[in-house]
Length: 319
Image (cartoon, rainbow, N blue to C red; front, side, top):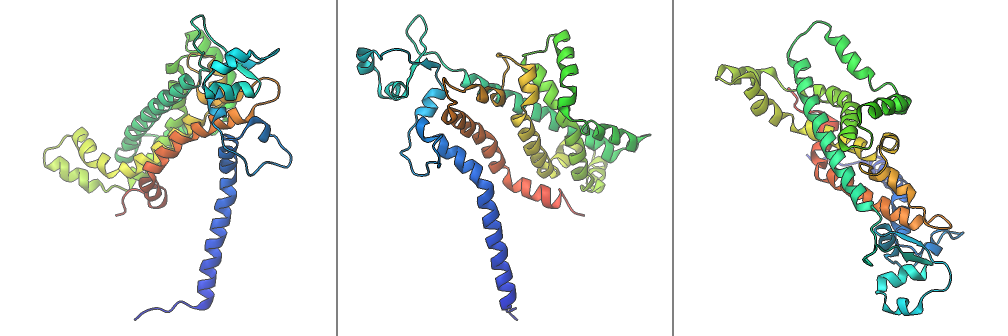
């Protein structure tokens, strides 16, 4: 027999959907504003009231990937006529490119910082999730003296704001030669995410019945073979959810990246605010860098969205 939905229930559902859509729109406003600013002319980015309708252009992205200075004096008309269209757009805004001794335009360094972010975030996420999964498996399957105390000690590392220990960490890193190195940030981010990984993965592994492993051990599997062939495939949902959170944390981290790096291992977050431009702040370039910076983490979360939803909502496996 079909269940007829009452009028009050239908209006309640419609109101809930409208509220969710309204909240989604409010939360998307900053992203929409960054995306719009990234395609605005510099003069349109600071108008009061704000410019909503404008002619899109890619000049901010050209500036983002190139080094430039403010044009002083009269513009060289011959050089302007010979310049390609994308260089003319920059020159029209009052800037000129910086060229090396061979006449090639110098890059701004954004690409190298972007690659640093990818290498450091991916590597630290892999290490944090791998070490956290193994540690969580040990706490979940084996009994040890002071287990609760050890788990609390691991959790306590998340209680102190990281910026509080930034200066001692900088002094220690300087003493051992890890300042402005990739391995230094990788170790730092791995240690910072490890406690979160252990606690989150322990919850998922606790949901996996021990009988699966016991059956595998009876069939002749070793403990490690049972872990890799039985437990890991069952815990893939938790691993994916943990990876997303660890990657976002490492990808967006700003304070340590600002203090511990200068040029070689500098990541994108501290580099983007440095692109202020000449004269007034060029918000279009900062918005362009921020927009590109959002893409990898958005894609990573999108591809793991099914695992993330199941992992956060339900856990790994229910008995």
